[in-house]
Image (cartoon, one colour):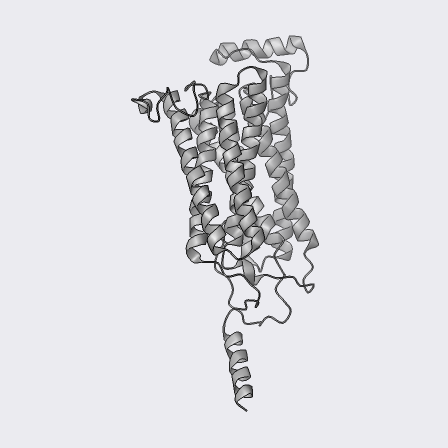
Length: 369
């Protein structure tokens, strides 16, 4: 009789509380918040790197890892390009220290082995990123361009790793387990495709900036002389360079630079179509799930803002403020898309035996998956 009473009490308690599987790994709230701090610092670091690239300030400080032979050079804040580069280095150092502390904390407090391994991979990524940052200063010549592009790619990869850590350390992540009750293959496909397309677009933007192609075309939405396609021969290129010099006294560009710029523009059409298609699918089939519908709507809003910022950056001949906003919104779009992909792989995966009156998880946090 006593055993029956205990079982009944257990079932009543389980029905009254949000369902959490027995094997779910509990994660401390402070660890999740620490991961979010690292994630925000990483976002700030990427934006700071965008400012350095926009200002072409990467070689303003000619040595590494010190700056002019000192940890803190005198009056580093008084000269624009030196301030931009040294600030970028200080933020990078802060992120590296945060990631080191986070990896140790995850190792000591996380029971899931794959999460501990992910934290160490992220630490290795940020160390590699620092070494690549030094190489962009110390290595000159054509190889420097390739290093800078790879540096940008690794930055986004590290951002994905930290975002994944933020998601899996959330207290809501363990509550979603495998179930065949709700098929989600199409959702996973559209969310993953959207994140992949946005990653490629971010990389095309990095190639454009690091090859000094951002101001190759100064018209929008046309490319040059009211035409959609950019110059394809030397005579048309000469006319383009003459117009660029007369308007802004810009240096001449080459055909590869022109087409690198156009590739970023053309791929933006695919980005727009993919984001719109993903949002339409989510709002049609998963409108009742705010953890999916919310990010999808925000992606649509940011898409419109991003197009406007891109146009303003072109019309202003790569104004630093407009270009920085364009870079920041691009990173935010990729962050939302990647987080939505993580959610897409978890949606509809509560066990069929879960209570129907389980409390719904709160709001739409970027990393609170």
